[in-house]
Amino acid sequence: MVKGSSQGSPSNLSVTKLYTLSGGFKMAADVVKPGPVRCRTCAVVGNSGNLIGSQYGPRIDMHDIVIRMNHGTTKGYETDVGTKTTHHVMYPESAVNLDDTTHLVMFSFKMSDLLWLLKKFDSGDDSSVKRIANKDLVMILNPAFMRYVYEMWLGKRGSHPSTGFLTLVLSLQICDEVSVFGFGADRNGNWNHYFEILRNKNWKTGPHAGMHEYNIIQQLYQKKKIVFFKGF
Ligand code: C5P
Image 1 (cartoon, rainbow, N blue to C red):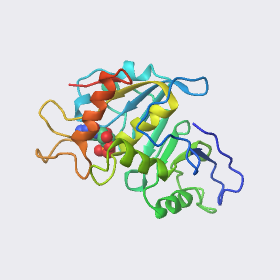
Image 2 (cartoon, helix red, strand yellow):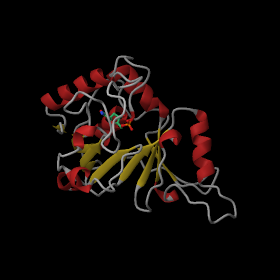
Image 3 (cartoon, helix red, strand yellow):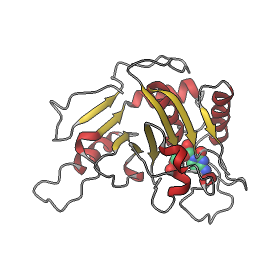
Image 4 (cartoon, rainbow, N blue to C red):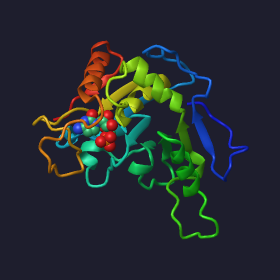
């Protein structure tokens, strides 16, 4: 991850940039080779219901970096999803409050998302306003990266990449070894969440090209670019 400067920020927010605006990633669906400035091991934890009963918790917690996303929670699901969260990916509509040691990784899909973020850290004199995360641990993904993933990895399939797929491709750029948990349907073919009771049994992948993303993940696994844990 590229460390940015907090100087000149429009608020007291300290931001680490994930890639500079001019790029930093190749314009090809490529996986970067291991190197000394990258993180060692990374667990990317999606929110699939196939985590239930998996007992992956200790295995997930073994990784140096554990990235969760959106409403992905550990409370009550520790045996299956672990307890450690070093990074949490979110956008305003999926935001949850993070503890003081977890990096907030902001996926900004629109301009107002950045304004939302600034507001979250600008509570004026009202100290009762709960900050969403530690202001020194905020990272913002360059929106150009989303375009890169949409065009180069997905061939523009679906309306936009899912949070999980974006996170997976990002982790391949910054970590040597990537393990992937919590992606895909559950054993009954439902694309549900591990933390929800499924009400709509026909729930599929929404606006995302979920099966296409899943197939790419399988290919990465077959080519030994990631380790994939398919769940139960
Ligand atoms: O649903 P949500 O976007 O919060 O889940 C996080 C990510 O986990 C998704 O963007 C998707 O990539 C992945 N996921 C999945 N299969 C599911 C649920 C989520 O692959 N059943």
